Length: 272
Length: 194
Ligand SMILES: C[S@@+](CC[C@H](N)C(=O)[O-])C[C@H]1O[C@@H](n2cnc3c(N)ncnc32)[C@H](O)[C@@H]1O
Image (cartoon, rainbow over all chains, first blue to last red; front, side, top):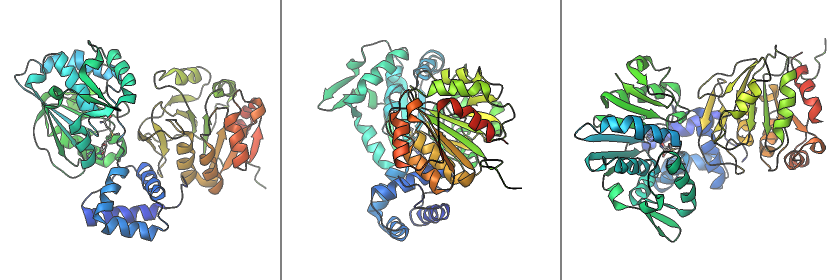
């Protein structure tokens, strides 16, 4: 990848176009990584000039769909960070289990691996029947995949190891059926999921939750946007509800962090 | 007075390595001056599972502050930042760190290319990048950017590398500022401080 075909000013121009023409605001994303994504896409799609790239992004609706898909980073895994899922299983979900009904928001769910992992833990704790998982993302294409609950079979060995490390109780293969190169996860899991687009940078709160998971999304935002999103979550979490972030993300510098208490060593906070 | 090579012009040092690079790092760290006035960023390929091992090893061998690079943390002079396992580490214009969980590059996350490239844009001719032992070609593209932006490219002499492939690829594809034996790295770094 040639790293200097598009300069900082051009990145700014492009992102302003995107906001104006399509209503998506990427201006408060971490600059270095969004620039990398833009240069990567420019190279992948063989544009010959910035002007051509800019014109296409601005005017071609179909291409903008691709832009959105490629600019966002959708890499994800099942039971990523096993110790995190262990803590959900042992510390968080049993507490929520005392409620008559559990509402969970997975914000930035990508292709759904996290939501399915969560559903498996809920099922093993016998809580899935009274839970509802709202799984949202800015990128509509990943949600289409998430609804299907089919993941590449080649990753399943890793996922099954993660699952066991996270305190999983069963034979992981009982949760899916292998179908050519894909593993199709049990319908009972996604019956309890609602998928919808939601842009953390511009959309509002839409419900109150006992648990919000937003992992590996905020690393792409600058500090100001991170704080805006924390405020959004704060307005969407019930008292004594939980907020879970990615392993490199933190509430620490957010002014209202004092109103939250961290759970053990994990990136999980409880609203006081 | 004429400026000596590398003097006062180093604003950041990035060291990239893969298989076989730990030995060199363990040799460098105990003799690093304690008044280094630029940040040092270390990008080493490793498994996601031995998370803090590298940081602990290096920490025990120097009086400089050593820590895993944290999201949005500012690069501080005299501090060593270890790129965390399983994320790419990028440097922002304001000299803060951004972590990124995008696709692996050269089968690697962290990728050395990613950090070299983003540091090159920020520090330009005041950047020094060192590429050590390793068995894939990560780092080569990054060193090209460093060259383009006028930074200094330092490559470990492949003959002194436990895994020569990575430095070899770099020597073939990039014009280095200097090629150094593993044993001479520490002196070179200390002299960047003068
Ligand atoms: C690296 S993935 C993380 C997936 C999963 N949470 C995990 O930790 O494995 C980041 C996701 O955040 C989504 N995202 C990026 N910007 C967003 C925004 N403004 N609002 C909602 N989702 C966003 C991306 O589309 C992507 O699917």
